[in-house]
Length: 536
Image 1 (cartoon, helix red, strand yellow):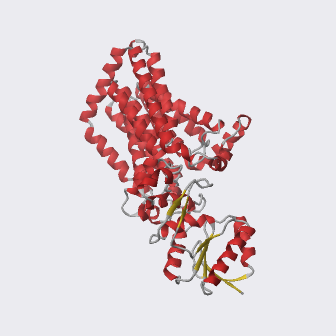
Image 2 (cartoon, one colour):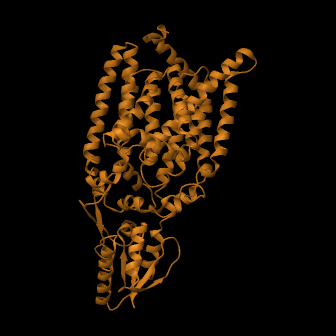
Image 3 (tube, one colour):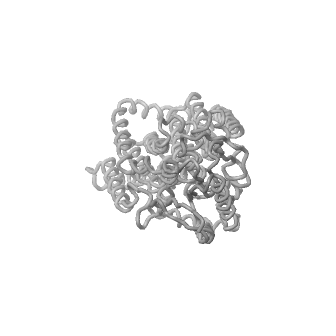
């Protein structure tokens, strides 16, 4: 065991899988192609690409309409690289092709993470890659992250950094180490989660090189880690720090538990996240531990250490009020990473059982038995979670996603297509970003800074017909309606169109109480209908 930790032997072991990898290049590509081909089978891509943008997506989509020079402000809490990628999509109605691409990427890098360990046989490595990628593909949490936010990139970047760590361990070289550093820089542009995962990556490399007493490598890792931290810090300071605000912190305060609340909070979050994992949390935790142990056994101790350090880092940041703890969106990367590592743990455990079985049944080939066991378990997992696949956002017994509860696009297009020049349009606050985006023929102007969670607002300088209710309570709504009535009177008694979106129960009741004094005619159907208001 000690001899295996020496510099010479580790290098020798790393060469063997590389030469095997050249012979198995075609099977690897075929395996990845099959996994990627399953993405449109599992995901309801038609609904994903055609559904209107809801509130949290609308302001992200709206940033695409602004000049490139305003991108550093308009990107707000969204990583600037993500916002830039959206601009590369030719049709702004299909921006969700970007999260779809990262869904596919997360499956591909999960395959790489499983494949890059030093397995007993190349075929077993392919099995590990397929199982790890398949678990990520089939994870129910992936089905609810179709929104136009960076959460799918968070997942892909997190798993990719672990895969690159395994790649760096496979055959050590300074060049590979600096590729990891460069990946941290690229990752920070696409995902703030990079700042959470990368300390564990370099921490794992430091631990592994220290245990092996590889002092030259330890110095290289230290320098590279410092460079990666500096690069991430500069990118955060230049592009991301301005999004930090009291409004944003207040929005997430429910996900910042105090130390004495931690036990109860974790139990509650585990219960809420279980449907998104597809199996009980304890099962996932056990497989992640098995995955870390398998990584150590297969010559990837730094990767295993990074896996172990990741939940510790997330826990510390949550208690320190730095990053929301175990929210299904902001911690999506943690769920996907756990799934990828759990896949490795499943293969490692199945292979251990298969090798024990081969002692009594010599004809039983461990790799074949491992593949069969994993296939049976994956099929069982798929059947158990079948209702999640091709999830359109509104399946009975599952959660209802915002993508099915809001449709400001239909309302905006109807009003813009049917209003006269003198008509007035009144909106609630939550409908404004979507209205501004879908009014594509009208100019917009950025207003920043602005005292909301996004940090900016837009004005439509050539739409003097638009009124925004200044509040969501009865007083604010009445002020907005009175302003709209006054404006309509000035414009010759024009019609008043009302568009509302993302209405809470309290706001809905406030609208009912205010509109009770007026004549209200519903002119469209759907989930967020348009109404015309007039005095009795």
